[in-house]
Image (tube, rainbow, N blue to C red; front, side, top):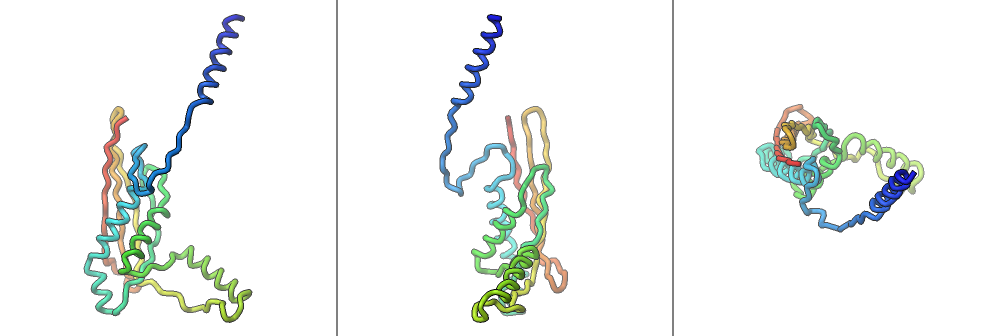
Length: 195
């Protein structure tokens, strides 16, 4: 019986110790690079988006488009598929690319198919319920000239407590009228992780 009481006392003391464990939360700059697990993170997403948009905007297709049309190209950033061994939310990467494109001012960006449907629903709602002066008209959407697709891939080499993960992002830009691929790019990030 004495042994049982001792074990119970030890368990209670242990639980009390865990419950008193101190957690700290510190606000950090969103641009600060912090790697905890070695997995794909926000720094990787921003870095790849910045470098790949810089690459695509410095290739011949954009000057050819401007000289033939006299206008900035209009782009849709379409589906980017995660084919890595990790759960990665591609939408965050898509938004990083869209932000980079828009901030350069070199191209115009329009919504992809899913958001266009939501906007059309809102426009239909306006045409039924908003005043005639403020309701937005149909048939004035900006048609895209190009669409971007891509994949995020990874390979893992692991031994004992060491791991090398290589992420490779492949993107390509296609002319929507002709189906011509006008740019193909890739960017790799290799990480060496030890535990």
